[in-house]
Image (cartoon, rainbow, N blue to C red; front, top):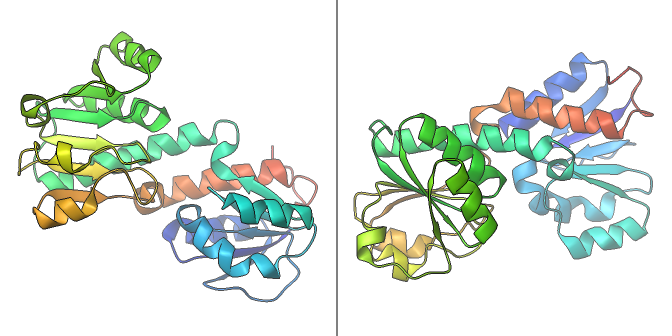
Length: 265
């Protein structure tokens, strides 16, 4: 039987607690560190850095820490002290399953923000990595007129091979390009929708940014000009917490088979 500490208050963590308890594990669930002898500490995927910095000095050699996007310098130091780290989204297959939940959550956010159907609308997906690929496919299946904006020539070709419109992010485009889209979906975790581009976007457009914080959209410009832009982190936890927690459990089980007292397979 394993002993776990689950930190955070998001719904995905609550479901993770429920699932591990149902499997007979010893689990403590709280907002901040509670002293104890834990085999593993489970940090919230969307807020790993915040919680990790708070509890790093309390970790003990031999413990596992699960989360996403750990601060590299601090993680390297703690590894030298005998702490083991598992990034959920770097495990085989996990990132793709998470991308599906993220894409479905992005659709929900867009419908709520735009208050109309997506079918027949011009929409731009910025970035054609894992999340961008799943999202663009879902949007096209719903009848959206999807264009992919990507700097990697190979990914541009992939998008076109999947019957999507695609343009190179290395080129410059004017108001006739940026102004034609009703919906923007950013998946790029770097500044991409800057003031220059946003100044050409129609005022009624909906901008959904699903990239890791701080996102890739100039939030201050959007606020000053009353653009309908939303930074939507943690969508799997918000819209599919049960499925999202199940994914985390599968990663935990694959890494702690010797600790758990049941057959993870």
